[in-house]
Length: 160
Ligand SMILES: [Zn+2]
Ligand SMILES: [Zn+2]
Image (tube, rainbow, N blue to C red; front, side, top):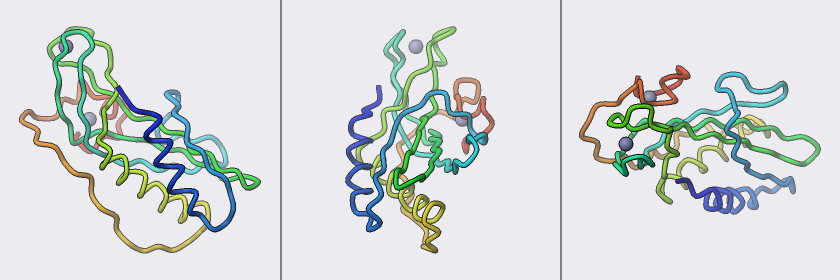
């Protein structure tokens, strides 16, 4: 489960503050390929923390290695960010479907705060020169499971 509307609203509130008068929108795109942005697009990859729920057995698990890929472009006053949050699947179910991360409001806010800073740096060439807030991490009992993590499979996961 992922609340796309909350991500979009939060992003809209942050980018409405831009002085330049450019419009920005955020769209989820499950076809984004990490490290292969289309020509003219910039990339930003960041990890966050989230909870998952298996749609087969209902088991829930937390992870502090949830990778989120953003590809962004500003052209003619219109900015677009495509986002893909990488999924994980259940280690108890064989061939379980990949589950979408459920990111807390606080971590959506932190993630998008960093995204907007990256937009300022990469699309407006501002030098912000500061470190952002780390995500609020979750209490995780079990080790990260690379064979059940899409980010690991794509070679971009911090948990590997
Ligand atoms: Zn399961
Ligand atoms: Zn991983």
